[in-house]
Structure formats: C-alpha cells, structure tokens
Image (tube, rainbow, N blue to C red; front, side, top):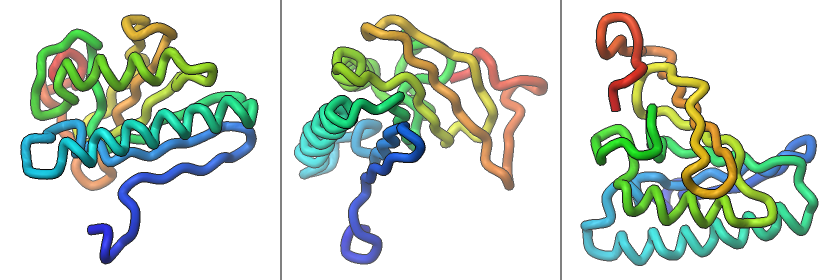
Length: 149
C-alpha cells in the first residue's frame, strides 16, 4: 500500500480544527507479523499530532478512522465493527488525556448511520459517528443500526 499510495495515516487543519486520519486496521487486528509494531508507531505518531494540535491552540480535534473504536457503547464487546476493547481503551485514554483531546471520531465500516453516541469513559467526552456508505447502507435490524455492533 505505502509503495503505491504513500502513508496510511494523515493530518491537516482547517478553520482551526485539527483532523487526524488513522489506519484503523492496525488497531482492529495486530496479529500478523510486524503489524503490532506498526500500530505502536502509529500510536506514537497520534500522540505527537495531539501535541501539535495543542501547540497550535486548535479549536478542536477530529479523528478519522475507517473502523470505529465502538459503534453504540464504549463498553461493547469486541466484534467485526469495532476495535478490540483493550486497544480501544488504550488509544482513547491517550487521546482524552491530552491538552487538545479528540472530541469527535468519524468512521465508516459499519454501512449504517449511527450518530449521537458519546462516552465519558476515557477522560473527556468523545462522540463517535459512523456514516453509511453511499452505495450500500444496511438496515441491520430492519429499521435501525442502533444496538447492533
């Protein structure tokens, strides 16, 4: 991937908001050889980005992640649609204890719209929004994605 497309994480600022894009696959499954090291390197980079946001006196920090850390509840069980609980707790605690904490996480992967999900479990309040794909939204229980990780 990196040879063809470049880095698998990114950052930019727009109108005082610092956006940080992660390769969430590294957090979802770090069992393949070398992946755990890449996940650790990305986590260090994320910490540096949060320090930069603080130094720049950012008005807010938004995390962009294909796979959401959680879908409907910060304590939900590990599943195909979220980060493993241990990883979720570790990463989100790091993001919430910084001077410029992440206040919003925007993700996809779930193929349904889930919004208004917040948690104070990791320090500061964070909101997670999962956005459906344009081409294939899925109604997981026939009417709503709420409650199904």
